[in-house]
Length: 167
Image (cartoon, rainbow, N blue to C red; front, side, top):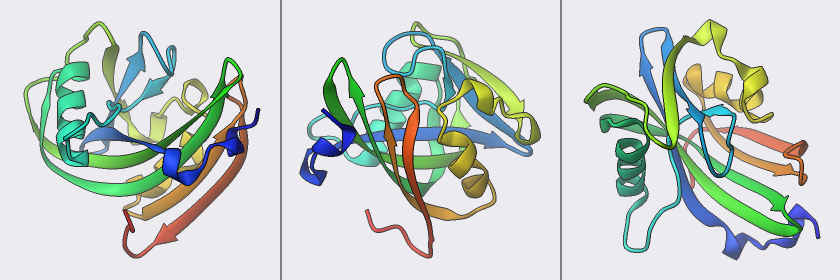
């Protein structure tokens, strides 16, 4: 079964948020579950009845202990792959957060750490991150599609810089 076997209607909405202060970005090491052992932003699935923004705030509170206050969407990303022979597909809504309440702290799920933008550890992140994250940190808006194999190797990429986000 390939990652392309999942239709667009089956994309699960999820969120991703990166805190930014000056020339630094907050990444968090995933300690369990999907993406374990990789640096990433906070985020996760949108629960029934939640808006994208409500889910992003809740996930950030749960995973790194801060409440986003001022943020803006920077990308809508179609991620597809295979886990244990079963396809998965997420429609990621990615945000940059400039103002928040609280201090980032380690939780059971993630261990946050500040990095200079020039020293982001892309070799310890998802393979696609090095392609799109620098663009959003430059202020660009993106719509992307990435596919992965069962070992999380990136198979395909489609990155479009847009004037306005569609979703």
